[in-house]
Amino acid sequence: MLIETHAHLDFPEFGDDLEDILARATAAGVEKIITIGTTLASSRAAIALAERYPQVWATVGIHPNHAAESTSQDLEEIDQLCRHPRVVAVGEAGLDYHYLPSRTRSKKGDVTGALLAQTTAKVEEFTHDGAEIAAQKAVFEAQLDMAVRHGLNVVIHQRDSFEDTVDQLRPYSGRLKGVFHCFGGSSEAAAALLELGHLVSFTGIVTFKNAGLVRETASRVPDGSFMVETDCPYLAPVPHRGGRCEPAYVQEVARTLATERGVTLDSLAAQTSKTAEEFFRFNR
Ligand SMILES: [Zn+2]
Ligand SMILES: [Zn+2]
Image 1 (tube, rainbow, N blue to C red):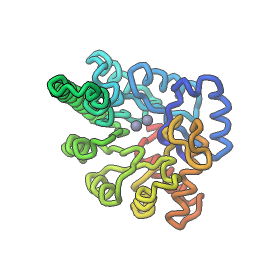
Image 2 (image 1 turned 45 degrees about the horizontal axis):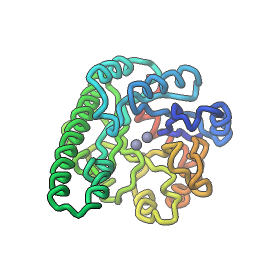
Image 3 (image 1 turned 90 degrees about the vertical axis):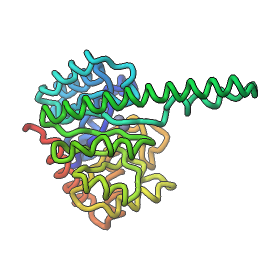
């Protein structure tokens, strides 16, 4: 039995054939699927799916890329949703600096060669970066406090923001656990998280040819410190790479981890499921 700990079943990619997808997951030995909220609307949709399908559970939260557009009213409503019996964590929450204004716009900035215009544009971009980062940090903190209030753990999303994310999380050690989902870092980075009481989870990236570093990390992290996920519809593992991902493919993630760690698929599945049961505390 496997637990798929990170899926986006409410995304439009699954609008046409969700029943088939859930049937394929069951056939692949996936006993539970956690569908992850990314906005207030997505969190509500996640709960609706969890109410409809007994194997589906929900998280509620605001993804950092939606932090700037979210309101305090959104956060208050998510706080209310935390009480729902099918909600098993807050998130995905965290920091994501990958799409900061200065990174996404700077290429357009230098077409004219007008130095002054560029400089002005740069200053503006950094001002926008500051506002974006401040919004993400505020929404992340609100969700960490929310998790503590409700006794829930947190699904953490970070991209190009590892140190800031860990810094913001540090004062919460002992009050909540986070899972750094889609973990792609070194075993040293993983060890630093475990030290603070957190976990990691691995996606189909572990099956990619060029992902030697994360495979090495996955082979070294201690038993009980990691879970498996797909992050579907993204990151389809080999041999489905490039196509739409779905929860059944978590088996490919688990199979690769089992090979790397020199254990059977059954043993890897049992161990990661036990970790997920302890982290999410279904039916608590
Ligand atoms: Zn994420
Ligand atoms: Zn996600």
